[in-house]
Image 1 (tube, one colour):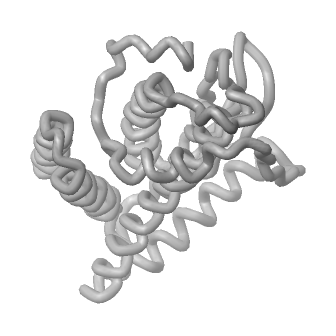
Image 2 (tube, rainbow, N blue to C red):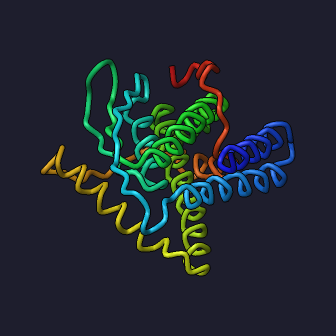
Length: 233
């Protein structure tokens, strides 16, 4: 019940952020919502001596266009909330991401990624490449990468603050988290003994504008029934 109350508070903050035209107010509401979401992740942890939980997994398929960029957003959002994502390439009509994690973290990753995909689509729909852009498509792709990187940074900061607060309270959270991370890594290794790292490249000039857009992103809005903007569909 407490968990549901926290999520309801997050939804209300996000609703306020969606209604305001003041960017400073929007940023304040978003910071509060992301902090609450991170705290929710800590509050759902079992006690150090509690029953052992096992990690789960799910495969997410992101359709074209911009499938690779959407998959990267899903991957980094999952990573920020203590899941372990792997980009596993094309299949079933799009780019696939295999996400491993404990149930509460998988739920948080799903909630955030669904929301942020929609917000990224909405933001991209408003993008107008500058007149000096050599390639509008390259500009848009770099905008998407900038948006994703900044979202990842903001989520990681919120998660780190929540973990630091729990550690200061002497709850043994650090040991629980370390154990759960090890469990998730073992689950990944059982499926994928060999993992290759990759880094995206960009040649566009929209990266900085994408970063700026992400700073005002709604980090937990739900809206799975809403259609994506034309640029991402």
